[in-house]
Image (cartoon, rainbow, N blue to C red; front, side, top):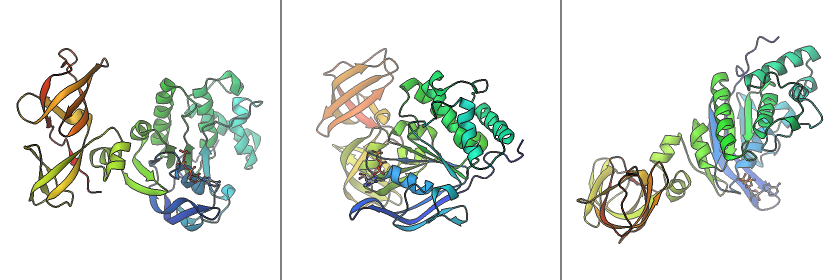
Length: 356
Ligand code: ATP
């Protein structure tokens, strides 16, 4: 049995001005800089085609960078083949060998990399235990649920004790309920073992749920990087505001600046919030649906255009001179009817000015 702890080899990943160009002119990744700390889970999030998978594959060595430098720990791995990088990848398709048992699947990479059979077996059993699949070792992949198959794939990657573990949309093939379960499992294992994980998804809720940090990508570049809360509470521009959680975008005027605070005005309603480097004049704010205050006295005049009961809350579409916004409220027992005239305000820390 080994005395190294899985995760003890976790290393940071660093990109310095990395680009990837396919053919003559398909720029899949455009000069990005990235720091993934050891023991953290960082998600690459963005719409289809923004360069997430290419970025991940460059860490794995499945694609070679066209320019720039990639470091894992202190090692410059930019030109190293995949087999020499000390990373493992979990794919969305699981990619298990159908004719091999669960145990043989997990042992495969270990024997391939030179472990004696008994040692490989004991490490593989340990890996299966870590993902909660003890007792499943003699089953075939076809005798497991999708979630269990994905856990075998995770075990198979874990037992190699990589410096970095990569996940490429690992939940895509699972139904909604299992997705939540497996993402919680992955996060728990990552935290327990202190693994460095880079995780690709296009699902913002999944990214918010599992990440220490999220890297939002757009058109081959990084739009913004930060903790889930930083991105949700202080998006830099419309794209990030809209991509992470739902956001209402409203035009406003900055009518007063006072140090780091700005006072904005919309139809006579004023609200003071962080200035974020902006000056007086026209600006845009983003407001989350739960941070719109629906009242009858103070605020921006609005009409309830649509009211939908979804069990745990009411969802409202509000219209007015400002356009249309989406609001949620927990007044399920006393909902507002369509046509009701209200005044719309902002909660403390509700709106955020968009500098970009
Ligand atoms: P998705 O969520 O759809 O997987 P993504 O964000 O992972 O998208 P990538 O797969 O990294 O995006 O692709 C980025 C860009 O590079 C796209 O325009 C894609 O068409 C292009 N691309 C990716 N792989 C290749 C390749 N092998 N040859 C040519 N172009 C490629």
